[in-house]
Length: 281
Ligand code: PAF
Picture 1 (cartoon, rainbow, N blue to C red):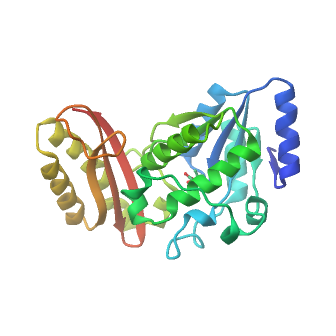
Picture 2: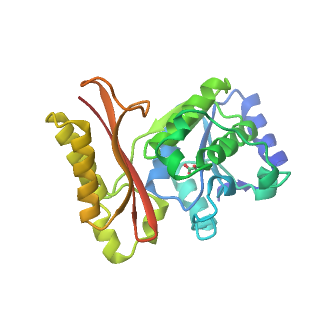
């Protein structure tokens, strides 16, 4: 059975023993309720490290007051079994008190400027502050050489790249490709909130991203691509937070050619889904 540690001294003892042996340590930060997307992060980390730690922590500081912190699915036994099968070596399962010794409300908070003002940063105020607040702690706790993050959370990855570079964390980031269901729906722990009817509609997000790429590559101006995308999503029953084309730094593109990413955040009933597609014009 895979080892699970819940106290910081035990975690530090395990990691320093590995480091004394000269082993490289990989970290996969998660909020649990793991699926094949997370296991692909473990596999990627394994390719770049000798030992892999997965953290499982539903982080209160990255949820807004009306978001799904309380109902976020918590499945620690299934997570441990899945992590073991995926080749993980250790589960770091801290309590809120371990993570935030002065309490979540009194934690030293981090904030990344600029890139967090747009898209999910604008729609979920404080969300990315909470993400970097916890990821900086996870890096200090685990002291990983490499850490894997999924490309599905495109903006999160950009924010983490920024803060790792700005604060000179000695961690190499490993971006992992999006894992999708056969019908295109990106894997997410939130997919299980969907009713059977909503689940049938949900892949419209991926179809819309493909249509955005096709339309942009056919020369449709950006405003037209975005308007078509919004109409497609609204027609299927989504409430759209954003459906946009940006450059890879999430700025509004100025040139007619270059690297792009189409990003969607849209709500179906009470469930908010995000997805993105990178392409080149
Ligand atoms: O992507 C997530 O699951 C979370 O935002 C992370 C990186 C584990 C921080 O809580």
